[in-house]
Length: 107
Image (cartoon, rainbow, N blue to C red; front, side, top):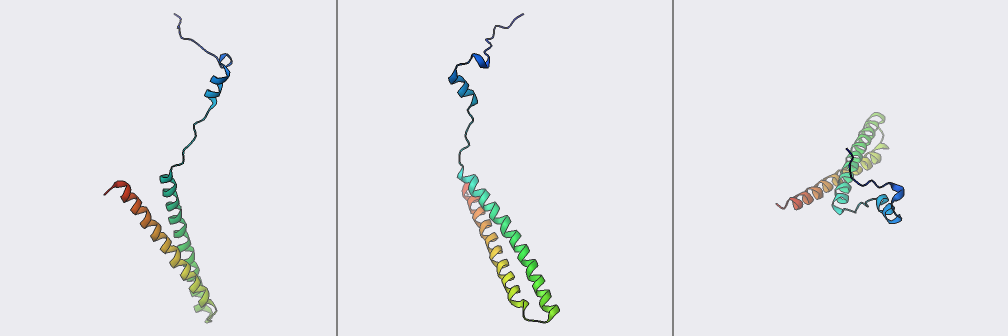
C-alpha cells in the first residue's frame, strides 16, 4: 500500500518558496500592553522606593535618638519626603490602572 501524496524536498523548491518558508512573523506594537506594563512597573518601583525610604527614615530617626544630635534630622526628613513622593506615585499609578481597566470594561 503506497500513499499517492506528493513529497517535495527542500532542495526541490524554487528560491521564492524558500524565502516564504524562512520568514518569521513580526510582532506588532500593542499600546495597551505597553501601558499596562508601564503602570505595573511604576507601581512596583514606587513600592520598593517607599519601603527603602521608610527603612532609611527609621534608621535616621534611631540615630537621632541614639546620638542626641540634630545632624540626623535633615536626613530623616529627606527620607520621609522620598517616602511620600514614591507612595504618591504608587497611588497615582494604581488610580490610572484602575481607570484604564474600568474604561476597557465599559461600566
